[in-house]
Image 1 (cartoon, helix red, strand yellow):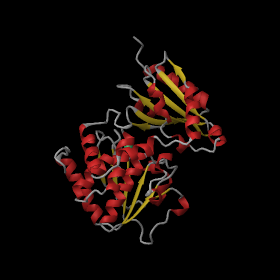
Image 2 (cartoon, rainbow, N blue to C red; image 1 turned 90 degrees about the horizontal axis):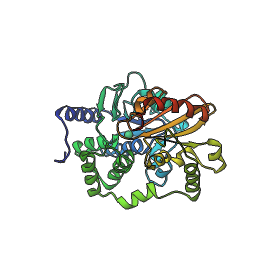
Image 3 (spheres, rainbow, N blue to C red; image 1 turned 60 degrees about the vertical axis):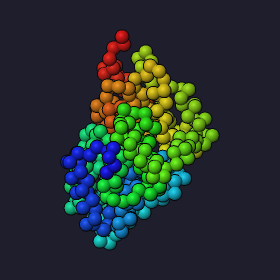
Image 4 (tube, rainbow, N blue to C red; image 1 turned 180 degrees about the vertical axis):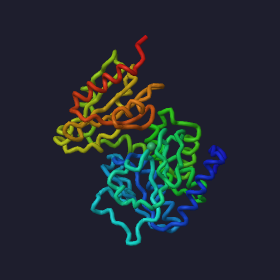
Length: 338
Ligand SMILES: [Mn+2]
């Protein structure tokens, strides 16, 4: 480990156990939550590179769309999102490693490939976790699953090459909102510094992720932002993303990744929400909050979860009804205006 990374004896033991287990297996499946994000994709690809370096057979199967900013990365095709291509080797998988999932069902349809008796390694940084693994490496203080992968790879003796460093960096960068969220700890920044020293091209990478809209994407973003709704004296900001409008423009939900962050750019806003009608009478909601306002707890009330300042949930209702329901809940939890 680098001298700047704090790892407790208990954590050290967990990492050693993971490395030992990984070395003893040959066919390893990696997966993460439905609708993989920068952290899940970066963590899985980085871990893939490590496992290949020690001679393992590795598969990465995920359900859902890849965010637009990931297109153009050369290892993208390692992530198989088409269920018809989810081949299982004749002898089966002998280890499954799951990144940033609070429960096993979060991997969606990939769970159909996970046999009851197969060993699972569970690597997660969410505050609550079902501990469904044979090994559960959990750290709610970690900025990202990527930061935890970094600790494992440092301990493994694997030389982190520029490619692997880049994928871990993507995980940390995107999960901290570009080193913005409260999870941006000294440990996370030390890891990032070490990754840059290993060859991450910070400018090129940041451009590729955050300065890479198509004209249509930016115009549509501007439209949605211009239609934002504010409530409770400007302390709540709602954005709405309608599927019909996406379709009209030939865009996908993955093309609008990061949209919810616009809500928090408004000075007084304490809670921001993005509503998406992903199915008829079904509204998916991304939540953001400031300080002590725990949107993870709020998300629990609506079939969701996440982190205290960034969470997701859904309400089985159309967009306008869902907004009313969420606003009522927010009225209860937001402290009175001084
Ligand atoms: Mn994460």
